[in-house]
Image (cartoon, rainbow, N blue to C red; front, side, top):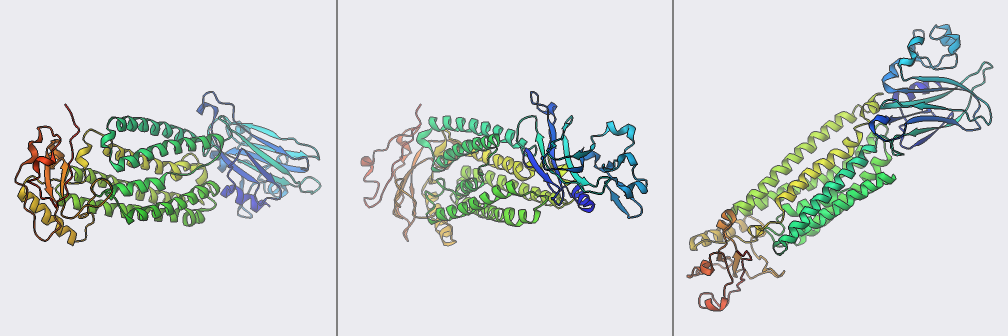
Length: 536
């Protein structure tokens, strides 16, 4: 029994995850520990305390010890005969002068009697009788990591006591375990932040709803989802329940953005289905992560937590990152070929952001490995209980929010959404032929999205179609508003470029009457007219 107690005090095997924890003399180690916040940490809160009570079936002598972890080294005395620490004052300990006769049956406290009041240690021997529910209340005066140990001891007649006890942790703010309380404030704060972002995004969307890009519709729905999800997270911790995470949909949204959805390609075709499959897989592993982190304790289930919960989720996360970065490279190559520098700059910024996030994920992952590697140390829970939530939850949410917020800034609805249109326009005949040759070479190298571009209503256009479009390279960089005719190559011979300069439709753009220019456009061509909606 004493060796089991030694193990219990050394490893702190049971960490309180609820307001009440049952302990019994039949337990391998009747020890429980929990972080405790003081009343001063929560103005207006109630007085925190630890209450130990016994069931009416308990009887005999029982030693109770309550202490804050900083005083752990003051418990027990080293026995030179057995070369071990002794924690209970018994006949052998008295014979070895480790304690006095007056301390028989209690824990050995290695502190002078006149200095006991300077420590957090509470030590008492209870002599229980049937139907006796005697107990004690330990008041918390400062924030710390507190432990309760209960051990049956032999009485003067040699009978060993037995007990069924319960330990109540009363926190100043309610019933939520101290290790999880920061999540309540964290999710509440982020719910408000996402709500503010959603209001701003909604106002901008309402102002420029005619120019909204498809990917901005995804972001709109996703902001709504985030605000609701964070509110549910806050609601769960407020009512001591649990809900899901954001990573699966966030990576899905990030992936389709980086593939150029709505900016370079009008649709992703079968690739969209692959995105959904990967997002669904990530969602499944995300659910396992939620359940695992809620039911498992890192100090007890480190191996299973890593290989059954964290590893699968990190695998799908890595797949998302690799696929996303490769997609950005492909999108940048297309934009470079088309000389669309404003779009390329936007994606380069996103690429740098993702590289930064990858570096942060790797750095934090390494730090977590090093930190959890010492989880078997007796003082690991005491040192990490305040920030354990951040290691498992907080930093991922903050990093995720940083990436998401930058994406919101880059893709926010503005009056210049036209510059992110799907097609780059040629300024003259030479540029049209050069662009056509570039597209042909890129198509031969395997780049997607070079032919068969959409006509705006979901159907694919003929490869030889002439396209009217808003904006050109000048409009990308100088916010000009000229309307140009661009030839999209698809035949073996370059088509004769238009002889008429169509930019004379108005200084600031206007509606082109196709009937007035029938003699300039071949009847077999399919033309699409676009109109600049910007008005003075």
